[in-house]
Image 1: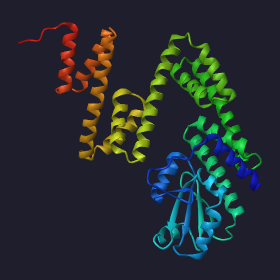
Image 2 (image 1 turned 90 degrees about the vertical axis):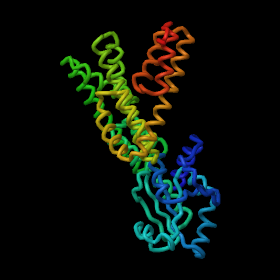
Image 3 (image 1 turned 90 degrees about the horizontal axis):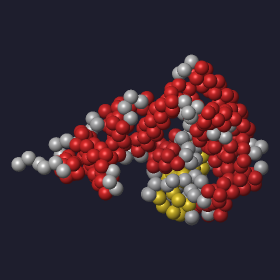
Image 4 (image 1 turned 45 degrees about the horizontal axis):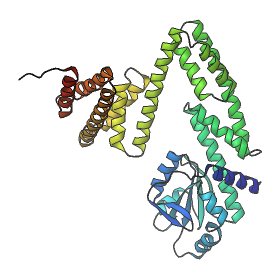
Length: 373
């Protein structure tokens, strides 16, 4: 079983040819990329959806040195470590953290899933076989947990992809069995949503119907309900009411994705870009479900006046330069209507600025308007 698990994980590693996204502050030792701190490792694990391994050790400790030479330096361990976020824990300097993980002997390996949930602790009988088996098991359980979190968050497509991957690489293991059960539940949910869409269509509630069908066609792709939803949407392509509803569904989806991007930026502590993106949601996608959350987060971040002023300046420069470039491009291609639209956008959103003055001059030149003396 251990060999099969490790082989499956290694195959996955080679097929993808990439390791989890790592922060810039890393130290390579014995062919392993060690993240600088546990806090940074947790953030990296969450953002890259990769499991985490904490190596707890004591400096100048004979057992730890032997472990590093015999286990950490092993070729298979190094290869598998590329699928994990790796971090070292100095038991002398980080006693509180070691106690949190309930480390009582050194060396020790603490295995966590991508959300930072502790799965396993090995602080005795650290044989190569046991270490590698636990690595493979952690990877599979973390993949299952990540897929389940995605399902609970409504990201069904990502959940299906994770569960189906488990069926391929972990056949016969508990995580694969759990994944099979979840896929059956997802299929049942899809059938239920398709029925709800049909009822909404019968009631002429096109927005609700197209929202459900769009969700099924995208999120439940690969399931029968997803295929049936796509077929029904194709049949409705000539219906004007359905087309208008689908356009609104698309607008809401783009707003939601922009909101998700802002949330990720905030988690990465890129607060300036996060605030700008929240503002963009409010401006570009008004009256969508995403605007309420965007407004709340933007107001919270904008309490830092220095951050808000810096973000506003950055946003103004970015928007105006982009819109002016687009307007000039349309002007060169004889698309006067689109050129005027983007010049006017600069004036509308950033009046009383040098950018607005340049945009007005461009409009005057384009229309042949002679400025007053």
